[in-house]
Length: 356
Ligand code: NAD
Image (cartoon, rainbow, N blue to C red; front, side, top):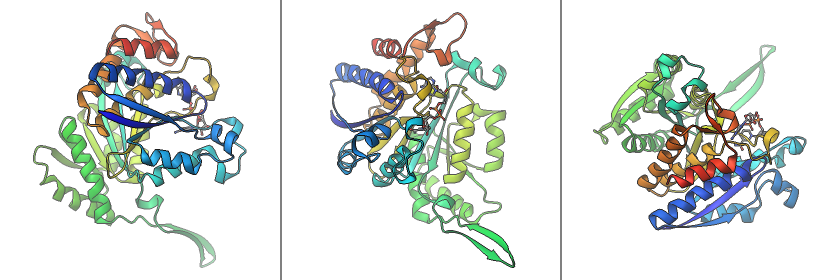
């Protein structure tokens, strides 16, 4: 298969970690007979330095015209004083909007070899965690009408949380399809005992569930979900929820692993175009030192193959290779454990590549 990938390396450790993911994807091409064409586009601080904007119109057009987008990270202290409209993060919001990325997939995977990094007790997470949160990204209270006004001599603020049936249905479909590619268990998270938007959410999910008889779909209230993620995270396979609940729950879930450098993510549009990126930032404190953990970006590349290119075997090959490298005791500094071998960012990329 031929695929065009736009590569947004960005700032800080971005170029270092993205280079390792490309190394791994090139090996996948070699082994499985694919050709990936990479188009590099500046984004964030490096684009501000060159062009005065965090992403150029030309760069954006390249993202839109490609089959998928791989992102490192943007930002750093150098650009903290830029005016709000040209800050590095503006480019991320612009890409999400232009590409119509409405579904955010955040896996929380704790490899059993790294169970010690989790803040949870070993009896809870000793066998590892493997869950995935599907978050609606463009609707709900973050985008609804909002106002602050004076009423009876005091300020009153209001944020409205609108959700239409078609918005719920399209994120629901992504969740059911994702569950079909994983353990076929879906938890639909809402607050249907209080919110009308949640009651519509629940009704729509129940209607969709009839189309996916292979998926076991259960409803769970968001407050209970927050507790269950700590008490018994291994009970979950895929969770689906609206924007604000997903924002909070996905950050809670990411802390269960205790290793920010390992975590990938995907943002998907209605078609197959998606943007794939590690959840961490540009880590300016370690940039240019070749010590960053590239596994979050490498696992993001695996998600690209699985969700945008429908290459399940190739994605499995990358994830298995990461598992084997951890089994063999290789660690970057952020996940270093006693008795393991400390390796650099580029060593880690090589070690994964060799195992594909
Ligand atoms: P950060 O995630 O960059 O770093 C937090 C800590 O984790 C740092 O100590 C860093 O060294 C470490 N870390 C992060 N990724 C690592 C990796 N792969 N390997 C080893 N260690 C790693 O968060 P921050 O320091 O709050 O933000 C730094 C910059 O990144 C800021 O400018 C922020 O705006 C930006 N940021 C960008 C994104 C993005 O591009 N999506 C996301 C978050 C933050």
